[in-house]
Length: 337
Image (cartoon, rainbow, N blue to C red):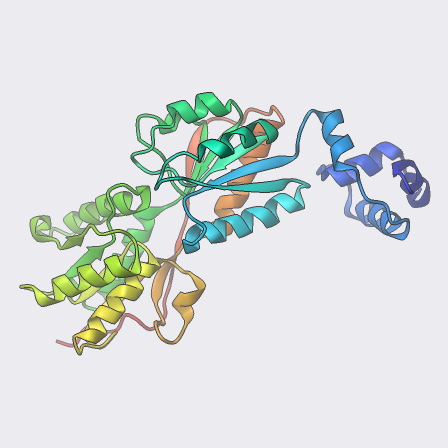
């Protein structure tokens, strides 16, 4: 069986260079990487992860904590994290929370002793991170969501979508199409995204000198059912809105179907904007205009920070908000006066 010395000889380089290539270190040129990998392939050489881990004192595994993989956002985070870590010769171990925004199941806690760090994506505003940070005692980076405001700063780094920018993009788009009676749905108080979006929505509407005391805000869960319930309630009530801004795409789908159930049309009668840009949003059934969250960039930045911490580089502490963008499809049209 070939070893790294054989690969070095075949590639015309040193054994240490072969090791650097398979560790994914950035200071190796692309031509040399290609030569080493071609030599390794011709010799059927497979790097010994276990031996390398022993030498480095690392497992080259990262734990990803998510709420539920049945939720599109967390499934997407897991998929992107897997691919991003694979590029860096790391593996991901996915753990589900045992409650919304909570910690992981007791039987899973031993896994933290066998990883180099943690990407924590399931935290919400009710999550006290104190015990978790103390117990894990490994580098942790928050991604997508932050925990309880008083304990999030126990974690040096966090990377989140810019909900405030998303609100401004959505409201401006509605206004440019003549909509001013805008209802917010899915403003779930426990979830950072829903809560932050509500605060930004109220602030931005106030900046337009509107009376925010009568804003219609649906604080249901960020789900299809929650979107349906809020939209149906507001449309059947006094002073119905002409537009819905949903804090998650699934809530927007529910709102669109609630509109249709009442004999109204999207976008002719009611405009709808979501927040996420899941694949389903481009389906003709919804054709949803939405705020795209750059999940890939969030994970890339979070992984960069986590691996830097693992390597002892100590990047400056900070919580970063990644820009979002509006994807204009067919669920918002000019309001008919």
